[in-house]
Amino acid sequence: MNGKQAAALKAVEYIQDGMTVGLGTGSTAYWAIDYTAQRIARGLHITAVATSEDTARIAREKGIVISGIEEVDHIDIDIDGADEADSHLNLIKGGGGALLREKIVAKASRRFIVIADESKLVSTLGKFPLPVEVIPFGWQHTSRHIAALGCTPVLRYKEGRLFVTDSGNYILDCHFHQITDAPRLDIQLNGIAGVVDNGLFINMAERVIIGSADGSVKEWTIDG
Image 1 (spheres, rainbow, N blue to C red):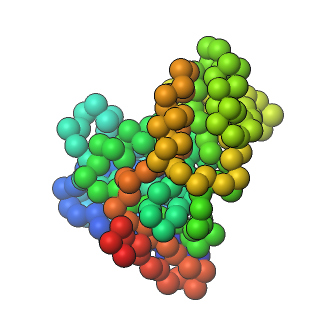
Image 2: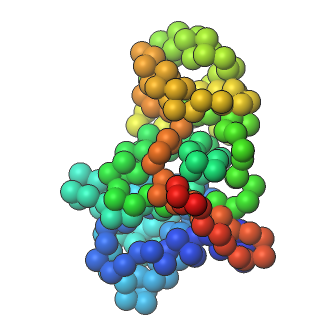
């Protein structure tokens, strides 16, 4: 069992019968989906909401029934991965291109639990390029305004093709290298016309579960 699997297995323990559960996107969240499906096969009853079309497809393939977010009035727990996490539980997400839906689901959740292996822990956010979701119209101008904040934005391509999110938008991967004031940058980015949202998740996670290569886990919470 690797670190991703260990963190996911621990997080799924927080799911209780009858809960509405947010299913995250990405390689670590995949394991949470897999372990949740195993618990369902053993008799767990939940309502599941997906953070991306890929997650919905994977979940259905594993026998999990997916409900639309408009069909639920709240989400009890959301389990998702992160591209970076600092000791204040602030995150960079969106490497998989689902940051907008991930943030909507996380904000609708009573508990947001993040799972990661040790490689995702950083003292300062920013080494991982910050994804910023922008509308296609005038994205070049939006990109210039973002660059003025001190980064190099790069339009995302995947497998040689322009990447388009599930909501029909583009992703700019913004190379800041170091983000010294993440809460301020979050506000600045979302104040730019054309920006839909960005991959900074500030003061949202209840806990970060970190899995190690030996299968052990540790949990960070905001109060230590």
